[in-house]
Length: 285
Image (cartoon, rainbow, N blue to C red; front, side, top):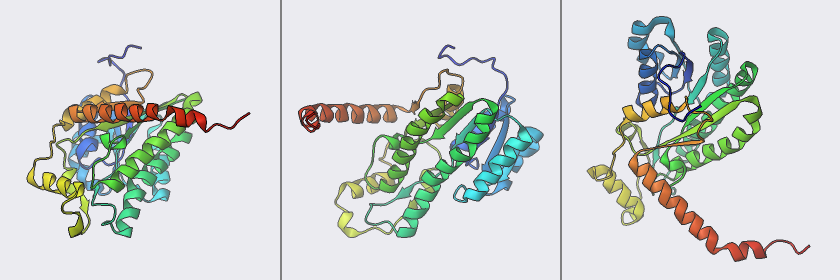
């Protein structure tokens, strides 16, 4: 198949977490408008009443907090049982924790990991038996440019995004024989309500004149560049499902492309500089 998505594809059924706002809501609206079916989950199901009234049975809605592993399994089992084949699972639920690593509370750390990392892992794990049984499917993991680069003051957020990307790199190899494919979506800063949803920690004065303080001031003043168009990004994620084989990563936004490329080039240069050390530490046969 060409890497250009077709505009004449048959309708699909999608399962999407975190659909109350942001990318999840935008994707749900776009998919329903084009005639697809969507199984949408969110913590408060009533937030989609307007779409349910408009689209009827093509929108299946369930309340779900992805930190509840038993509920994740139950909701996914019910969605597949009631809808039959689900072509694409979009793992989108998550939020940002904002604060220097030392400033964060233990409960904040646990909840960030439980939501962004463990929650995402458990959605994937609960999905795999169904995709195997139906002969394959796609999983689209919404990550971030923050899965390959890092900003000060987002340490735990980055830990979850780097973590889920590593998990997928391994699992994608494990399930490839079952025709299950993954794409990791890596949007840069976008004009969603992500910033308003940030959970913050009490600040420590000692970090005021550090890179963490610089990021805090940039975000507070509006100087932190946010160029991404969430509508275009949502459409790019939908379109990538038509590309075969599935791209392992989908980078979106000029800042994401620039930042990730610079980070990768820098890491390659640092790796090459250590080649002699690396080769010298093999065992002598």
